[in-house]
Structures are given as structure tokens and as C-alpha cells.
Image (cartoon, rainbow, N blue to C red; front, side):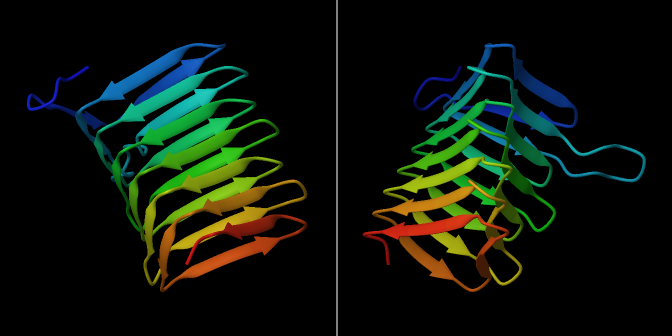
Length: 171
């Protein structure tokens, strides 16, 4: 945990996980979640299982790997700057799995997905979905929700196979 003005840097080439109700927190941190490189797999930051939480606050995140909430886990970005690179994946997969962006700036060139009843929510955030960026709700019960956001879309925002995209007071 960093303090305002004294930031911590984290370069992730491995697997950081909150499991079985555990919590991983980053505050005032510069996070680089690395992509796959040759024989090295992509870095992963995961909230796996009911009540598991990855909490990222007042931080800068560069994602070229995988950030996921699955099987009821939650990933929360609060007051962050998130840059999801072209090979980056941010995903909420499975019932009661949530990824939320609250008062954050999100620049997406990769994929941000809700699938298998997962939810991705943007609240009071600024989203720039770049040319290769995709924000998707895939599968029945999956939801991508924009609440009071500003969205610049040069990529794709899609709902497929019974998923839903909701724009509420967003432009």
C-alpha cells in the first residue's frame, strides 16, 4: 500500500490472486500487468470465488495481460487510470462476478467483457474505447452497464447471445 505522493510500482509477470473470500488491495500504486512474451505467460490479476476481492484505488494500471473476476469474485477500480492494451483482457466471468470502474479513466484498446452472467459496470467514468477496443456482454444474463459516463467509442460495444448493454445518463 502506497501513500499519496509516495507511489509503489508493481510489474506483474505471474499470477496475483484473491481466492476463497480473500482480498488483494492496491492503493496509490503504478501497476503493470505484463502480456505474454515468448515462453512466458501473461500476468494475471484474479478475484476467484465468492466474496474474493481485488481492490484497486487511486492507482495507474497498464494491462497487457489478464484481469479477471470469476466464480463470484469482484474486481473494483476506484479513482484509477486504466490503460487496457491491445492484448489486454479485463473480464467478469460467471454468475455474481463483477468488474466495476468507479470515477476512473479507462482507455481500452483490448477487450473488456462480461460473460456467463458476469457484470461490467462503469460509473461516473471517462471511457475511450479505441479502434481495436471491444466492450462486450456475451451470453444470457451478462451485462455491460454505463452509468453517468462519458464515452468516446472508436471500437465496438456489443451485446451477443442474450447479453445486454445499458447506457444510463451516459453520452
